[in-house]
Amino acid sequence: HDREGQVEVAAQLGLDVEAVAGRVESLRELNPMLGHRGCRLAITWPEIYEMQVEAITAAACELVRDEGFTIIPEIMIPLVATTKELEVLRAQTVAVAERVIADYGVPLHYLVGTMIELPRACVAAGDIAHHADFFSFGTNDLTQTTFGLSRDDATKFLPTYVEKGVLPIDPFLSLDRGVAELMGLACARGRATKAGLKLGICGEHGGDPDSITMCHDLGLDYVSCSPFRVPVARMAAAHAALRS
Image 1 (cartoon, rainbow, N blue to C red):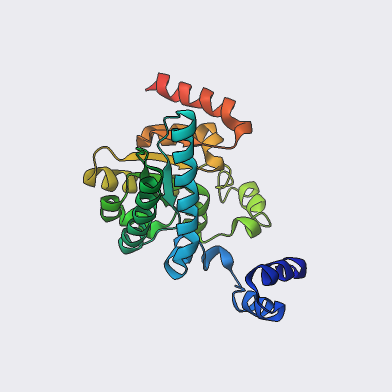
Image 2 (tube, rainbow, N blue to C red):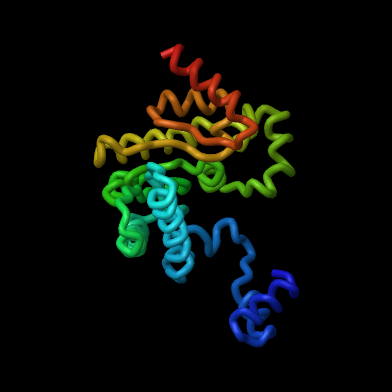
């Protein structure tokens, strides 16, 4: 977005800097949180995700070949709303991964899954599961899209909601039961299609004890969180397991 970066990109691509600046301006969005991101980028510009898949697969192949690692990369497609999105992007992902694996000549097993972070994806989870080896719930975005809130702006009024009892707690700090209901729907429909579907969450909710208890009750396989919250998450997971 800055002029210095645009000059650098223009030089690398052999373009006029004003052409790069014009392209940046044409891509500007009023609400990028609901805009051209996630898997939508991969549908419109496949080379972005192909580059990332190649990097992931090549790195794994080098560690297997050169250092004897046993690795199963998990490539996760974000912000999927429709079955067709994942079908198309899984095919692209597999094509690139298989080419890289063949070039390195090493055996490498990998998984391709999706981030479930939109209400429509929860409803369509049974169909989406046909093309997914795992689901990881992006609970930060799922909370945003379920409530129609922007995490960046909601801090201006959510404290008042909590103070006046409109909400029991900030839903970005602890998993809301309505959001958990959508997750439960997605879990049931996903595993009805694929019994062994691996399920988890990623995001700050993964370090909240009450949220971890909900995830345990939903039958999720794992929670992921920032490294600072791992000790609390481990303790909460242990308590949930003992209680059940």
